[in-house]
Amino acid sequence: MAKRNTVSWCAVKRRICDPASPACQQCEKRVSRPKRESPGARGYGGTWRKIREEVLQGSGIPRHLWPEYDVDHNPPYNPEMEPDHRKYVLVPRLRSEHSRKTATEDNKRDYKGRFIKKK
Image (cartoon, rainbow, N blue to C red; front, top):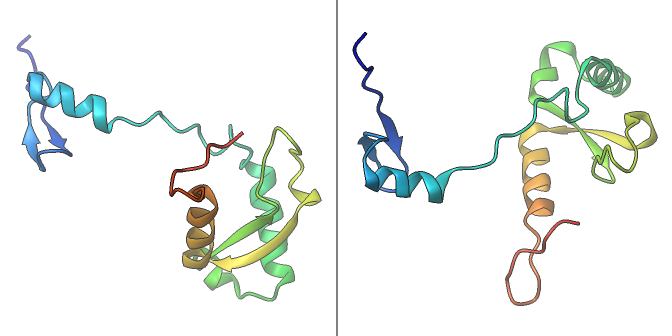
């Protein structure tokens, strides 16, 4: 069987290129991210979906608008500290607001502008 020619998007050069080429292998080293665990592995399985539904229903948000909302944990969800979602303060937020808040919290910087490492 003939070798299949695969191409990928080069994030550095901003064009389609051959991943076997040395230049793209260098790009891949700079751009690659660790694979994110599945939602279930991160604590957002079937139980979370039921809790989310309860929070959105309890807030009086119409069912047809649910896709526009995320449920925010306060303090931020950490399954290592407390895996039970119900022990957090859960607040429905518009998806854009929740994304903005999460990005702000995840990218905190020190007084010199360096990212603060998570513990």
